[in-house]
Amino acid sequence: MLLTAYSGAILGPIAKVLGWVMNGIYMAMYNLFGIEDVALSIILLTAVIYLCLLPLTIKQQKFSKMTQIMQPEIQAIQNKYKNKKDQASMQAMQQETQLVYEKYGVSPAGSCVQMLIQMPILFALYRVFYNVPAYIVSVKNQFSGLVDTISATSGFQDTMTQIMKDYKLNVSVDFTTTDTSALKNYIVDVLYKLPKSGWENLTDYFSNVGSEVDTLTPHMNKFNYFFGLNVSDTPLNVIKTSFASHAWLILVAALLIPVISYLTQMLNIKLMPQAGSNGNDQMAQQMKTMNLMMPLFSFVMCFTVPVGLGVYWIAGAVCRSVQQLFINKYFQNLDMDDVIRKNQEKAKKKREKMGIAQNQIRDAAKISTKKIDSTAESNKMSSAQKELELEKAAAKKANAKAGSMAAKANMVRDFNEKNSRK
Image (spheres, one colour):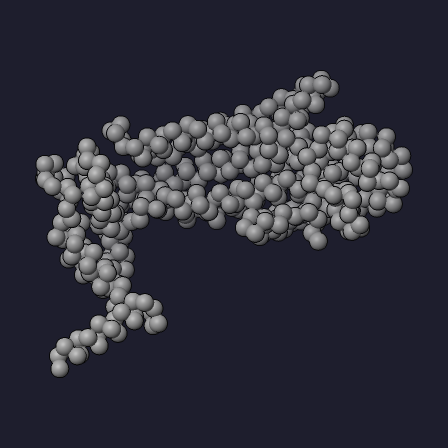
């Protein structure tokens, strides 16, 4: 049992992989430079994650650039069906919009991929930072001597429960279990969450742990604190305890975590290219709203999540800002006409593989924003569009897998055709 590592079906495996990488970074820093620092490991892990995500980031921003080029045609379609809410008109608008995307060789879901990848990573990192000893072996080993002494003390379960109540620790533990290994893991979980005052008062609960606490405290100050902040504690809790003890510098440091998180994310948004809009584009308006809300969301959330996660958000925003500076220079020298041409070639090969002729796509997707007839019937599909859909359906049937319903339908059709010729 690797301490109380998160065991969720989806996030659990992701958290274990991220924990394994973070453990490798932590051990490399210690072996090469003698540095024990969880917060620095988080920052380096963040840099590694965003370096791996860089190709997706570039792809997403290429999609954004392409969207700006397609925007006049898409807006023309939206204006064409502006006051028509019947189902046929809505379907026709969706089909014509899809054809524009196909013409430029891009997918409407192109901007969602990075978010779908980042969100599970973010939530999994929360689990890692929430209980670092479960993922960094050397951090867990630091607690071994103290845990052995506590677990050998009579009635330690009740004492650990009292410590949790006194310091309002939100830790999922079960001190009623008879599993000795699990009990020791739970002790580590509680000790890791203790604030500085808890460590100072630990001998009041266990009188025989003084030497172990003296041995462990210097290491704790190295690996678990970031500018005086416990990375497993929340800024809100640090602010409360610091205010009560008049530790003003620690209080300011805790307050700076959400503030810096907000500012760095705003900087990142300012550096990102903004899609142009005439004010009527609903998607552009939604993006503007999201750009305003996300930094505010991180500001509020940073008060209630572990300091380590706040450090991750700050490091992530800084990494994205640095990346964006280089990406902006890259796009300044990028020939978008060449990108469109390559996208069209890829889309052409994909369609030809399906058995759809290129000229059919070109005829169906050809939209001239200057010649759109706003009074034309919008509830009927054009002949080119019908032909395109029929070709797609025929291609899918022709490429049907053996044993599938489509393959069986083809067999029946062939049988009927043979009999009709007799």
